[in-house]
Every structure is written in structure tokens, then in C-alpha cells.
Length: 207
Image (cartoon, rainbow, N blue to C red; front, side):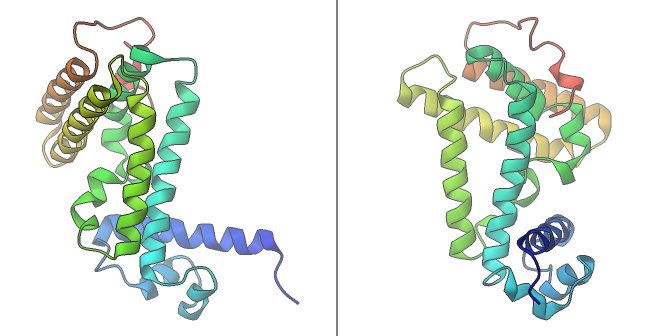
């Protein structure tokens, strides 16, 4: 008797969670399918009922990580728009919760160094997701489309790099790094603007 669709979906999610942990701990190349399936409590042979190959799994882990962070962020800041949204986005991304919980956050600071070395399928998935987030964030910037896109690319590159560095140093220096990056990113995205009451408390909140 075949398993119900719900069982297959739950099993797929178990594999994704195990893969995300393995990839963050070991990297894409070093994390084996056998280890991933063992952590998920499944046999190696069962993998191919859910994913075509490892590249397909990597692509789905990247998408799942993006979606998870986006859903958390959108639900928390659903009432904000424009520059308020941008301030909240920067502070949430560089906040204490994201700094301390890499396993629950954006996959870029932990996985970006390896993405260029993996299969084309995963690279294509990452590029598509990045374009989607770039378009959404750029729509919040009060500037012509090309200028808005340029600002978001610059600010987000600073934010990802700053978070990677902050996670590698002691807390006092980490906070100094993130505060510096935060100020620069906000200046890049929203020149000549200041904090608003809606965004001042974001830094120590959740993503």
C-alpha cells in the first residue's frame, strides 16, 4: 500500500532539514548523501524517491533557506513599507538573533563561498532566488529602478560580508562590525534619512 502524500512531504522535509545542517557544518562537497539520510533516519536508497541528485537537493536547501527567512521577516514587518521596511530589514539582518543563530538564518553568509563551486543546477536556483529578493528589496528604495538596484546590491553585499566576519570574531568586535555595517548600509539605501520609531528596536529582535 503506497504511503499517503502527507507522509512523502514530511519525509522530504526531514531530508531537507538534515541536509541543511550537514551543509552548514561540513560544506556542500564534504556532506555525503549517506550522512544526510542517516541523520534524517532514512536509508540511502530512499533519497532518490525525493530528489533527482545531490545538486537538486542543494538547490532545494538554498530555496528553503531563503523562503524560511523571507517568511519570518515578512510576517514581522508586514506593516512597514518604503524606508521603514529598509531600516527594519537591515537591522533584522544584522541583529543579535541572526548573528547567534546561523542555522535558522539566511544561507548566504554560511554557504555563499561554496555556491560557485557546486553544480549548475544549484547555481541557477540561487541566482533565481537572488533576483527575486533583489527585485522586492529594490522596490522599497526611493530612487529610479537602476539606482535602487545598485544601492541594494551594494548594501546587501556589505551586510552578508559583515555578518560572515562578525561570526568569526569575539562578541565585542562582532557588535562593532555590525554597527558599522548597519550605518553604512542604511546610508547607502536611504541617504539623508534617520531612524523612525517603527525600526529603532529591531536590532535586538528576531528576524
